[in-house]
Length: 398
Image 1 (cartoon, rainbow, N blue to C red):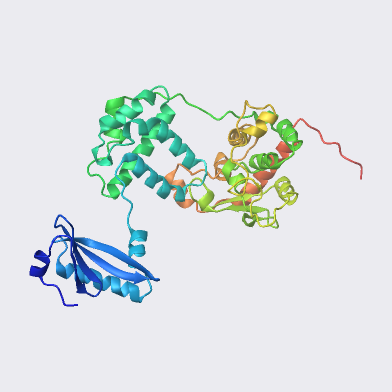
Image 2: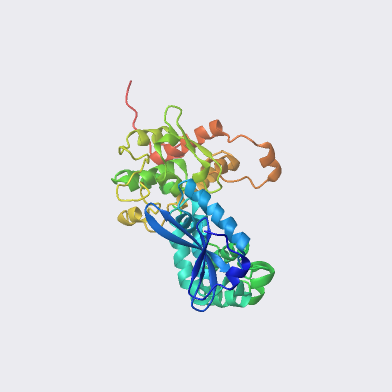
């Protein structure tokens, strides 16, 4: 086949094709519009790959593209399939960018609940106004219209939705789908359109520390993984998801230490927990499921462990007046009311960050060994055998 010239391309009759050699062809439609094609055979199948229209793609550019595709063929790669695999998805609307954002953000989420929570809140509050809009056309007024119905009636939910919209539009800017300031930014922006909200101070319902021993006794009478997980939550004063997602390789029962990796912690910093003798005994008595690394395993769950929410257990116990997270407050109240332990030590036990920047800069240790007697005293109190307990154990004669 002879090489094409620019004059031949220009005069190519409508409805005809002509080759340039090296799998490169130019085709003229019935209307005379010309486009480049890379024609080849791969795995016994004839294929045609478009390289763009002429004259937008010049003869020299078309030859360069054909040369690159022939190299792929030599390497055993199907050029058309390879291009389709790496072809970026076209995303323009707010809903499409939100889907992309969730796919990116969930890699760093520690709880499986976050994705359905994001999707449900956006579906209910953001998409009716913003869903089909091009992200580049969204203004503060559009975001205001989405948030206004819940801004004063559901301030907590409104704050979460506002933050999610802001993060989605930040991603849109990074993807070069929009320019300028983020219309969902609150400070100096939406706050003037929506006004300030007064959110009532909320606390997790907590059990009084004087009742902890009777509750733990009731809890130990219950069977099942949820009951044992709840017990470990109380004994270690850890967060619920840290316990339910625990794996056996995190525990060293010989040294009575539980090391929670940073990826599973709220602040992404690894945390060591000294285990009381009661916590060690609980873990040693736990059954194991072959092939499942989780302590509180579940055959029905895709995650391999029981759900983070333990409310179903408290419903069975008829204790809906308290929350699982509230036991962290119970522990802190006990430390401050009944013991001489420093509150900073209790805060370290709960992996809380020291608010004093100077003290935090000099205090590099996690005070693990100092926390051991604290956690053992707490476990003894949960047994009803604490120093301040009214339960008097019956001693046997030697």
